[in-house]
Image (cartoon, rainbow, N blue to C red; front, side, top):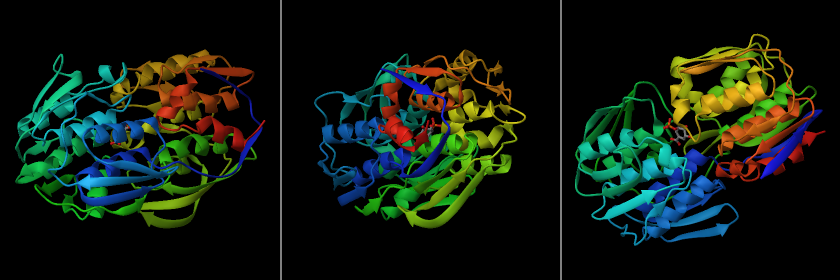
Length: 428
Ligand code: S3P
């Protein structure tokens, strides 16, 4: 599908974002292995989270959609999953395949799990290595790529230093750790999103975190909960940037998740000069949540690198678009992980920014996007990557003429009503 976007005057209005994708995956996975029913409101509408639910259904977990965004999960405890007759399909979702593999490693049966073409090109060795050390037997194409065949069994806790800063890998090991004998201990090279740790506590589990060391006792029983998912800050980022860059804009985003490991996009933009106010703050699912008011502002630009990168990894596509409108431009470094996301995001960003007439320098681990550029509408290749499609839709609001997003339907992977909400907020 192609979507055409034209230059906008401003955005204004008040919206509530769909539930956070990362948190929804974790609540569903933990709900499945908890004892008793879990009820989740504002569950993410994203296709990725629907993939997690369909995999869990095939593993014998009763799941009901109670209303538009309400999900009820009949938890079966640590020993309750049953073998699936067919292969599980994780679709486009790295979180589903990696985190679920942690749970599948602790089962007494074999599971095959695969996904779409993009997922089948993403590396799995990062989970295969630790899960194999714990006792699972995992076969993968070229020992690295899906489809995976996971022969679970009795697991032993491990002490493991993560070679890459990845919340998906950390979570896969913690979930396997729930099934293991002994205490699993993980050392992170730098902080990544801690939704699994927080969710485990919500379900009554015990997780200890001391600086960058996380430990979890195995064979803990966890219990079903009634909870609500905060709005997705990574989805909010597209509107935060649009409101900041289009003059005379003012929007209110209700109930946005403000987890310290995810709100870095807000902190970073504020440091560059953005006007983002937190109007009210509360807690949901053990996570901080707030209403944000964003008004247009001029931005300085700068550099993001090192330990900041895992904190804004999903926001880099929209940050690269934003960079074109800053005073000094933006340098992004230490972000080679972008090359193995839903697309090679460094390549997708550089090519599409250049198509809009922007000056960009590509590095192995990032890019430099020059500031104060005027963009010229063009044909954008989404590369089937949801965050590329949405980031360039925002670029289209800033560009002269028409911007056409090829493959725009992929936005549904994380944000099915993105284009609807965008037209609701935009004044053309
Ligand atoms: C996620 C972690 C990040 C992120 C992904 C969601 C999560 O991936 O890019 O969109 O929910 O844990 P990595 O763990 O590969 O960094």
